[in-house]
Image 1 (cartoon, rainbow, N blue to C red):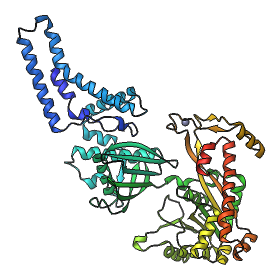
Image 2 (cartoon, rainbow, N blue to C red; image 1 turned 135 degrees about the vertical axis):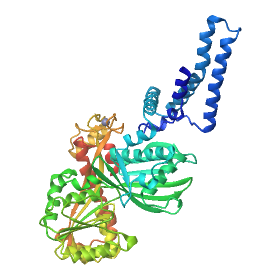
Image 3 (cartoon, rainbow, N blue to C red; image 1 turned 90 degrees about the vertical axis):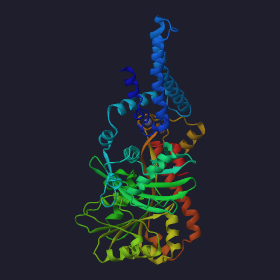
Image 4 (cartoon, rainbow, N blue to C red; image 1 turned 120 degrees about the horizontal axis):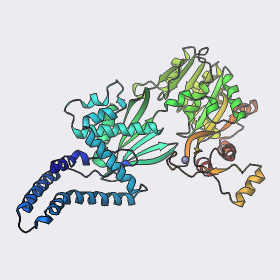
Length: 536
Ligand SMILES: [Zn+2]
C-alpha cells in the first residue's frame, strides 16, 4: 500500500507545476517528465519491490536490520529526487531575489493543488477570465472541446494567466519576445516602465503566442510577416480590449499587446493632476463653442485620457459629441464614437468629412497624422465646432512646427487653434514606503534660491505593495500655451519662424514643465529622480 501511495504521489502531474504566480513562476522548476523518464520510474518501482523481496529472504541481512534495509530501499529514490529538487531550487534562487523557502513553499502549495484536483476540473475552477475574439468566440471554442490535450489546457491556462495578470497590475502593454534560442520573456509596461515578469521555455511561449494569435483572428502559420489583430477579455463583469501586433524577429516571433485603458473614460479634469490655473484655462477653452484644443505628447503620455477627461467636462446630453478614434479606448455614454479602419479605407480624413455633415457641436480627433486631417479639423474649429485633438509631438512648440511642416497655412493655424496642451506622466511615490529624501547642500541652496519648499521632498524606497518599485499610479505634468490674439497675429504673419519655434520655444516648454514637476516634487507627490527621468 505504501509503495502504491508513493507511486501515486510521484505521478507526472505532481511534478509538472504550472506557474502559481506570475513573477515567481519562472523559478518553479517543472521536473520534465517525458515517457522515457516515466518508464525509468516504473523500472525503479519494480527494482524496489525486487530488493525488498531479496532483503526479506536474504541470510546476509541480519533480522534486526531488515526494517532499516526496507526503509533505505524504499526511500532512496524519493530522497534523491528531493535532493535534486532542492539543488535546482537553490541554483535558481541564487540567480534571483526570491528566497529558497519561498520557492519551496510555492512548490509544495502547487503540488498539493495538483494532487487534490484533476487537471480539467482545475482549469474550469481557475479561469475567472474569458478571452474572446472579435466575433465573440471564446478561446476554448477556437481550440475545440473534448479531446483537448493536457498540454493545450496548460497553455490556455498560462495565456489567461498572463492576460489576467496584466489587467490586475494595470499594465498598458504586454510584450512577449524571444530572449535567445531557448527562452522567451514576458514583460509588462506598468506606469510607463517595462518590467520582466516571466521567463519561459521557448516552446511553451510559442504555444502562448499561437493561442493569442488564434484569439486575435491572426494567421498562426504566418510567423514572419507583421500582422495585426484584436481580442477582448471578460473578467468579473468588466470587459477589456487588446490590440495585438506580431512580427518575426531573430530567434522567433515577437508579440506586442496593447491594453486599451478602460478607465480612461471615467477620468475628469480634476483627476489628472492639473494646477488650479491650468484647470481654469482648460475649462475656459472647452466652454467656447469653437476653436481647437490640441493635446501634445509622446506615446504613452496619457493624451487620450486627458482628451476623455476634457470630454467628461462637456454636457453630452445638450451637445452632439462625435469622436473619431483609432482605436476606441473607452466607452463614453451619450457620445457617438467612430473607429477608423485604414484597411477598409475608413480614414481619419474621410470620417471627419462625414462627421461634419452630422451637425456636431464637439468633434474629437483621436490623432492628427496627416495634412488632410489637420486641415479639416482646423477648418471645422473655425466654423462653430469645438475640436479636441491629439498630436504625437514632444512639446507645444514642436506641435506648431509639425503642423506648419505638414503644409498647414499659418493663417488657418492661427485662426483655428485656441489652446495647446503638452503633457508627460510622472509616477506617484508609493505612499506606504516613501522616505524623506537626503538632499545635498548644493540642492538645498538651489531650492532656497528659487523659493521652493524642500522639507517635504521624498524619495522612492520600495515595498511589497508597490512591488519594490517605490511608485504606484501616475500624475500628469502639463504645460499650456494659450493662443492669444498677439500670438495669433505672430503666427499668421509668420513672425515666429520655424527655427525660432524649434529652439527657443521648445526650451521654454521644457522649463515650464520642469517647474510644474518641481511643485509636485515639493509636495511629496513624486521624486526628483522621476522628474529627471521623464522631463530631463
Ligand atoms: Zn511601496
